[in-house]
Length: 162
Image (tube, rainbow, N blue to C red; front, top):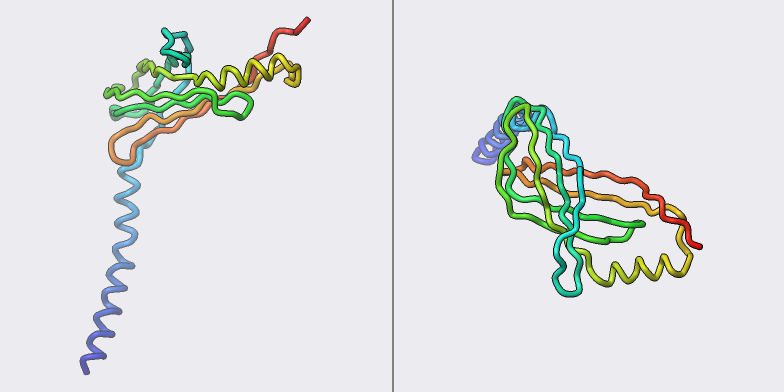
């Protein structure tokens, strides 16, 4: 008798869980942003060097097309050159981009001296193509699960060697 009651309770529990699943999914859909922000790199400037490493300041342009403010709490940027990691950096900055607005965020990145040496040796050896391919990607961290990833890539022509 007790086993039939236990089986009945398990069946009822499964049915309740199955009935609650659409409600949970609907709740998650309301938490998700309706319009993802657009994040572009608009500038890269040199910074004072720190010992054997070189530093750059990557400027990000953030566009918030949503009707709610975009809160962020830190950012990460990584630069790859010819499919090799070249530089990366983080910033512990908090801020908000108002609804239907835009803002700028500057992230300092560090280039390892060995990455510079590797690039110089590659250029000097002549084994490179006349085009340097780059990829810049990163993450704008937000509260809870509202982080936003971005990525851009392109090619830069290298000067012809004589």
